[in-house]
Image 1: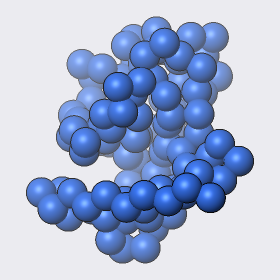
Image 2: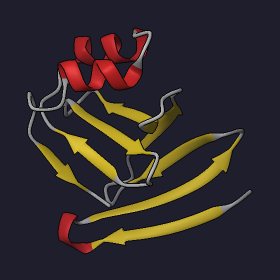
Image 3: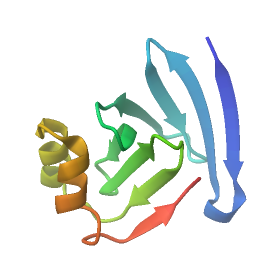
Image 4: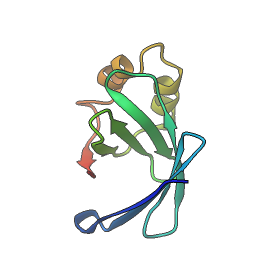
Length: 103
């Protein structure tokens, strides 16, 4: 198992990543775990959704991670069911929701 720990003081988030059967588990400073799901896309690598806070996390191919705020679960479901994740992300998320660059 590969393990890496990253701390982002400006966001007050601690991210621990464990490679387990090609899935990522993320642990923030509050102990919340979220599964990052690999996606087939030339632009994005993984996606995660925190239902309680309506936060969409996208890790891109260049390893940058963005958190999109106030994203309804229906939009997340549209992304996950889309034929092209990248096109759906551009159409339904980018320029529609506020975001924070995490890394």
